[in-house]
Image 1 (cartoon, rainbow, N blue to C red):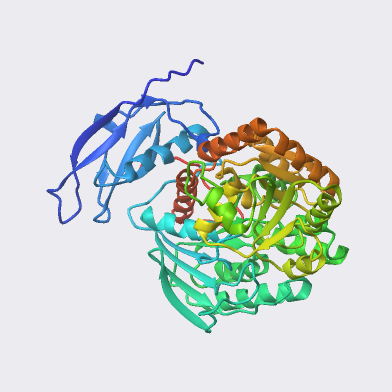
Image 2 (image 1 turned 60 degrees about the vertical axis):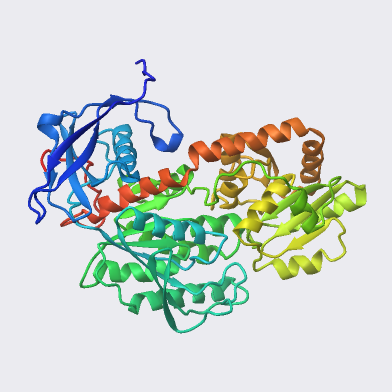
Length: 544
């Protein structure tokens, strides 16, 4: 089927809102009739024919003062779409994006969500252990989701902990039993929980359980949807009990950033009994949810095929780049600040320094660089549970440097000033997580070097972006050799950096991801009389 490439035509009609005190107010409402929706976060350039017959299919319903409700009939089906009164605002564009998602999935696709009854503002409670002002890990994504839903006319509130990651200590100025504040126009309630200095084994479990107990007894204020963030899995498990069996039963969505059961099997931590128990908890918790959002197709496969979650209740929403898209920076000033000479190749690993990063491999590569006289500097930027041990073990290595966590500006400047950006994973880690640092790396116009399983999800992501080089995890000489090769081939390094940035713009855009998430949450909020554990309803219905 040939796909035309001409731009869409936009038709504007005037219609009077009814059922409202201001019934005489006339609103401009834009309705689209064209070939060429671009969908799926830029991954697909396919097109679908969309026809909106204005005379028969445009209806305005009474709504909140800021919105109107439009019905658009498509292929003999009906779709409800919210629009703000001013069609020139970004909301009109979101209508296009949200609709495109439904069109690309097919009107009767079981993976799409119903956009029913949206004449009221959905009330959403987000509960996660990490939130702003933490700047690494999953906190930037949870914070962006809260802000994004707020902008998209959701009533959003957050229950979270005091900032403590990746240092694993509560930051100065925080630490009261309970505090409330406004962050990015979102009400945020913080609860004190147990934060261990070494978050391993039983201490990590106690930390998550203590946070879960705080959430369990905290006021929820009757939300339509609760969004739980995993990690922390055991907090989610406790909270899910209230969501399922409490007097007010909101729809429940779990956002999976890491897979605990897969992580235990890949890292070898915990025995057989522990792995079986964690797998059981993860399976029961995810299967109790009305919706499960995962960050990669591989995660979706594991969640459905291994943990048994119905595929119709699983949605993939990729993590996005939370840094602003920038042009290549002049690195000279930043390199001078950090003591990096122009002659040496700077290999920067940014983010958490934990067990699954396996950063002793980087120490070994830096020691080899000392022995072989390579003009290379390995830099570990950030904090984490393993940092103190890494500093002690690397004290005698000349070509190794540690830098504490930086703010967003300093972080972005450091990425842009480095020559190569490094992902390092413990041997055996291949499916449990998608490194969040990749989204920031691709934003920096720099080549990515990954020491990881060549068949794992990290390698797959780098290959999809054509933005870097992959070497086997746990092989420090292969890591050093790849650094030297990239340093000698500047044209290739530049091309890889450009590819990564293009992938960031086309695939990892924040607005498109948040539009996709908002559509999913709105569908959950519209569920009425649902039976838990049953598939979510189809995306359309015949009449409003």
